[in-house]
Length: 337
Image 1 (cartoon, one colour):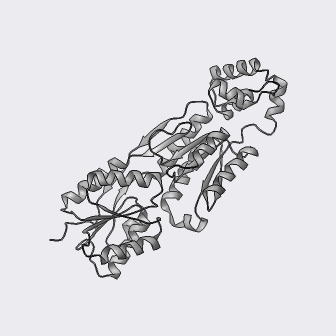
Image 2 (tube, rainbow, N blue to C red):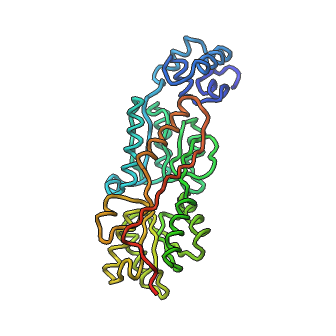
Image 3 (cartoon, helix red, strand yellow):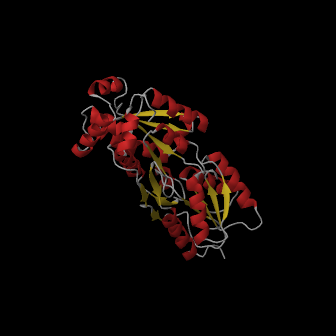
């Protein structure tokens, strides 16, 4: 801390090793922090010269907002068709409601706009922490939230992410279940229509699937039905047509099923189709889609709990979430002779 500068809550947070929000809770007498942490914060505040009077001034307008921020790089119209994201938000809100927190939801087009929103939320004390979705390789949001000292949890990152909490999915377990089913059915030529190639969990899924299904052909799409339909037409029109196609979400698998019917390719007689995510529509179409099924609402709730650990002054943790279950329906069958 520079000589002559008045101490701030961020100074106290760095000295104690907790988040600025936890310091605010402790100094403001709010629940959510332990008595030991509250006492330690007050001791450090006194050591730094952050007096009770200064605390009252500093906390004016900067006390905990009881709000968590979520910025999504998609349109509100796109969200209506994304069952995964709606269920995830529902899980977040259930856990937030239990703690009397609100959710600030913002739709953006570009990552720079998303980072700017975090800076504004932080400057205006709008949120206590944020949830980051769709982590990209070398994602610029991570250094931004670290610089701001803004508590953050990543939903779907992989490995340790210093300074932020992380709830990752066990892509290797899911890939093993997919590969086991297809191998048992005799499939050797397998294609996959993936999400955007730049996403960290897409890369993790690609590596996991390639490890257990050597030679799998991956075609990148963007989670939309339109992109999946275009990819499926190219795949099915190829010379060495695969006998099975794996789609990274339910919407793309449904589009692929439609293209197979349009091209008069029987499912599962000539090509088996499998979705990495489930939704009610996957059971209503004919044939019903084989899926990897996860409790996405619970995933959202666990994401919120990891963020609350940060807000309560505990260190950031990386937790792997692996509850995917293979549900075999009518869209998968033996490979054609």
